[in-house]
Length: 196
Image (cartoon, rainbow, N blue to C red; front, side):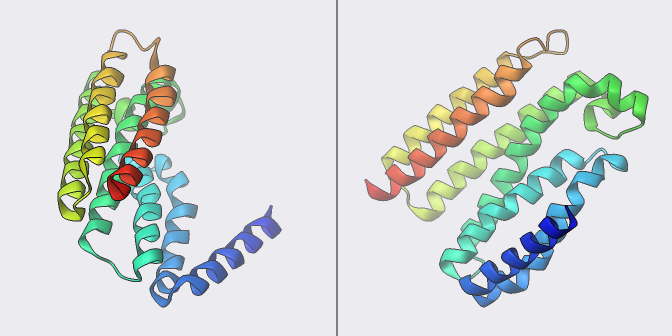
């Protein structure tokens, strides 16, 4: 495992260096978050947002890899992924409340309850849609993108209708299926928005 980790680290550094100087300078920070975020549940209930922030690095990194600079849309993408992923991780963590409390792991649902976690997830996903709207306005994506944003908004509403503090029986559908559809629709919406 140690050898695999070292080889992966070397490949990350080499890949970042081949892309551009800014990617290379930022690669150690990305690696720090990638390695460190999985430990955060041991000491903070904000772990859901740290996970989202860490995954959001990929979106900002993709922008920097292509453009060679931090620009406002990169930050909007980063924010969108941070709150999107935090939102669905909050939903997913609701099934682990008893385990987290018993083993003294930190999570928002274990600390504040399932109802508060689901409300916070809704707020995160509202912020996600707002960020997608901001991104569309900033980048001038075409009508196809806006159709995708409307579809994604509808899926978020549906996702949150599947779970409640008293009924988490459809949590897997809300977490896995719906967010998979959202990812594919967003990809198609951005691609179509650029091409059309």
